[in-house]
Length: 94
Image 1 (tube, rainbow, N blue to C red):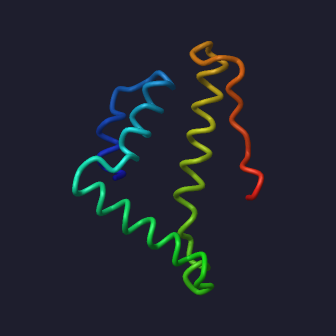
Image 2: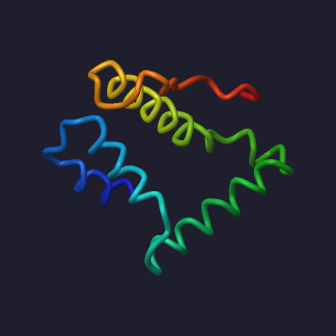
Image 3: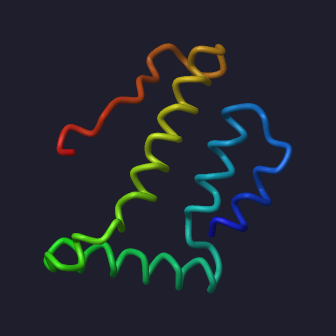
């Protein structure tokens, strides 16, 4: 997924375009992305119940992506590309 996303983001500058590319790549739309999505989701669910697995840095990438997306949302809002009501915030349960 990272390689395909990097290719889509090449030359993309506007926050909205970056967000569209990320969200489009995140949705499982073909066999390859469906397989990745199922494996990743299965691993995440297993990590919830397996303490040894949960100790691995599995959540570093999703947390980094969350922070990146929140930053792009804030940038788009501040640049006038999104309504002022857009307020990227921390998820309360984290």
